[in-house]
View 1: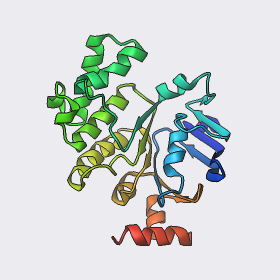
View 2 (view 1 turned 90 degrees about the horizontal axis):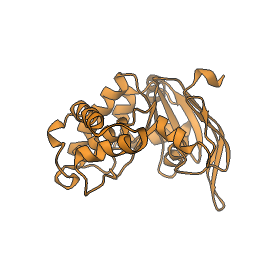
View 3 (view 1 turned 180 degrees about the horizontal axis):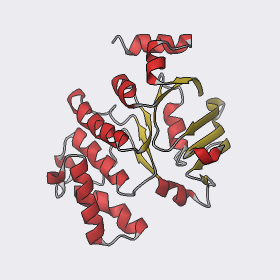
View 4 (view 1 turned 180 degrees about the vertical axis):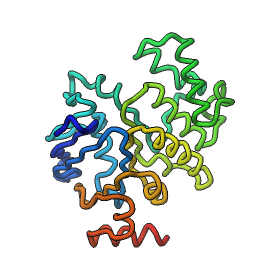
Length: 246
């Protein structure tokens, strides 16, 4: 069964002391699929997505990405080479230029020459729409521009899967759309994406599947058409009633 999926998650559990953050979550994602993960604050969405590259350690269960089973302490770097991640905060190195931020990991971990890494970096900056910012430092960029650099930096490792943990939630409203446009282009290019988001319009338009988290579990999943028009679960209906009518 797992051969058909680039991401295979079975029965993962995560506790913080007595609090169960994840309660036996299963999720299977096909190559090229865009999955948007939504739900109320504290439902386990961000914890879940952070387990996929071991930023959060699971207590039990199994995670397999592109055929590699996550085995902490042995093959963590192999998994992380397959998976790019973009966070709420941009986490750019302030003392490095935009281009240096993007080229650092490919040079250090993939062994690219400086010239090859810079060529790749410039291509990615063109892709995210800010090639003119290559020699700038992060402090001179807007929040939206910094997040686009963070996306380019993740793509520079040529990952098989991209994870996004509420990538627009720290942005001013007028900057949200410029980041979503980059993410849409990425989705339409065939990248496998798992996106924790509060942007319901993005989830409706771009996702192949919507996952609704509540109290550490996947409570409901379906196509965006089905989920947003006729959610089955009362909890999902209540959540959509709140977020769609603000």
